[in-house]
Image (cartoon, rainbow, N blue to C red; front, top):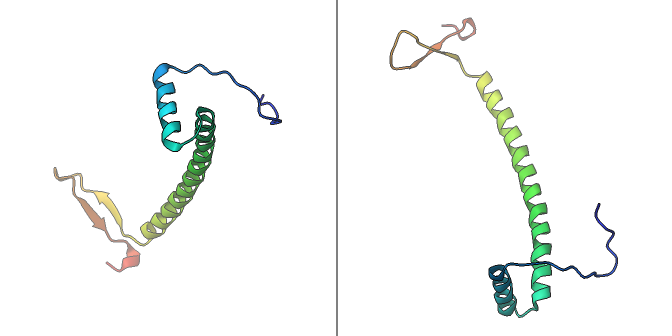
Length: 101
């Protein structure tokens, strides 16, 4: 269970040398302390997660709409069946009585 956020608390973390070097270089480049660089990067990951979730939900909504539109378009198309008498795998259109063919 996550602890309630109160005052800032100390957290000891072990980092491999390469990761620590990367963080120190980034902190120097950004003009911040190592502490600030780590906190900002962690906060950014949560914001990125939230943004990604919103984008996935938006894309899912779009996919549902596209599927609905595809079904509507398919309603107006003549039925197509595979012509088993050919090796080419072509399809042929079968006209229904409604089409007057």
